[in-house]
Image 1 (cartoon, one colour):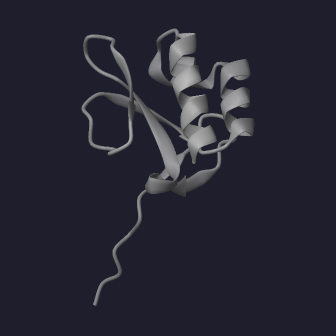
Image 2 (tube, one colour; image 1 turned 180 degrees about the vertical axis):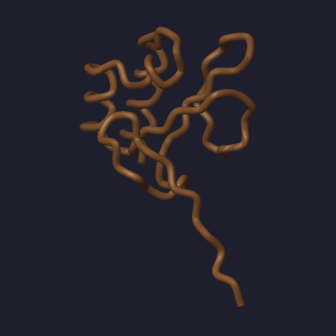
Length: 88
């Protein structure tokens, strides 16, 4: 019996490879609209970030999400990510 491979994704802050389910996905669709994708199934370009404050701060400081999604990330997205990490 074949073992199912777990897809790995790289955090834009710490560059660590982790299973897709352990990361938060931020998506930019064709219209340039940003959204936080918890299902991992939304259409658009995605960037991943770890579920911890250190990686969120690092991504904000080094503009990792901006580079990965090729767009300026508004503070509201960082605030939403921060709230998600806090509630977890």
